[in-house]
Length: 310
Ligand SMILES: Cc1ncc(C[n+]2csc(CCOP(=O)(O)OP(=O)(O)O)c2C)c(N)n1
Ligand code: SF4
Image 1 (cartoon, rainbow, N blue to C red):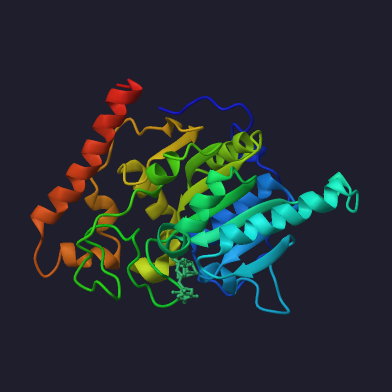
Image 2 (image 1 turned 90 degrees about the horizontal axis):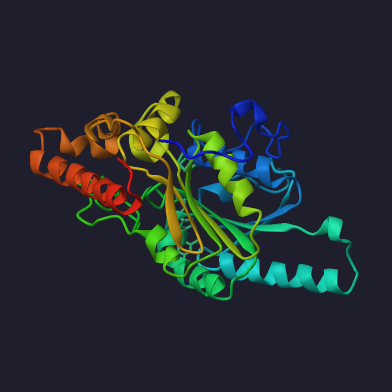
């Protein structure tokens, strides 16, 4: 089930302009980079990226940058506070007529899950509370990638990281629901694999003043342990197994923008990734696999009940 779209209906309708030039120091097959490229296409040129320390801060190493937009590097915890400062400065310059409206910028926080789920949650919660007019893109690679793939509060149950080599025993924090409780103007999950869904959501969000937050599953060949050529396949499997629901919430009211007509078993998503190898070798961990599948099934049963879809 796909919801009807108002603006973007197919890939050909996506803007052709590129704001991210090819070639950067990031890994081949990095899903975060593809997501940023797509989001930027819809936001256009007048953007200032407020980038919390993480993998994406390696994009721009002075004096080089692949970005056509402006960029500010912040601490892991301070990106949303930095966004407030930039928004305030722009508003003052605009109100004093020191810059024309055509030079106004969209303020976009770019942060990993370590910043988003852990260190920067307080600053982001405060920004949403103030209904700061900003954009927030979390590229969720489900660990502290830049420093060697340590567990974050986003690391899924059973996944191996350098600080949980035999598999995490904690459940992934539901940051979507934590943010949603504050009823931000717009909130959505996105995936690089569903580019049209992503573009439509960024377009829809642009109609709202206030906090606009996006959570993207960022497939990570280096940390997750798969060949970079499989990146889009893994992103697709996350959606088709129901691991990564595509949804949006306008002022807190949720709807799913895509529901697979037939769900694949979660094993299809887990097996190709080295971080889940311990679930299959040296022997199969049936109880853990059943637990992961049951969580997904429970989620979608609830969706069917609440959104009354068959
Ligand atoms: C307070 C603090 N602790 C540790 C670091 C070191 N550090 C820099 S990037 C990074 C990882 C960030 O993880 P995440 O936000 O998930 O982004 P990713 O690296 O995965 O892109 C860490 C721990 C830091 N910059 N600040
Ligand atoms: S470690 Fe993962 S998220 Fe970081 S640049 Fe490489 S592929 Fe991208």
